[in-house]
Image (cartoon, rainbow, N blue to C red; front, side, top):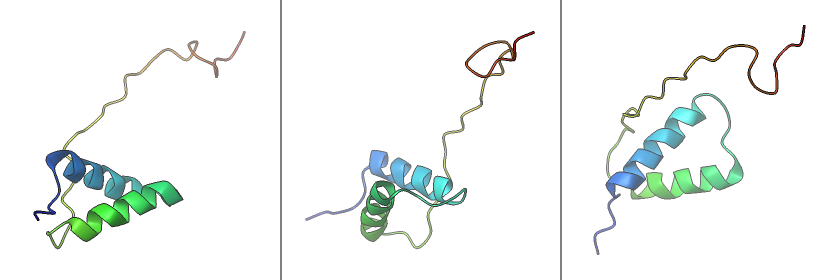
Length: 68
């Protein structure tokens, strides 16, 4: 049986590893990370490929807008 990661699972592993560098993963996320890591054949996790660039918005938008 071939138990290697699918491309979607590899991307999820990369995202979880990147998130873990910013803090502790939740119990559910950690369980997914460990399951994927145990099936990953590589010795190192590659960097995330997707990059999200936040779009700036005026400070008057949203729930944290200052009035007056």
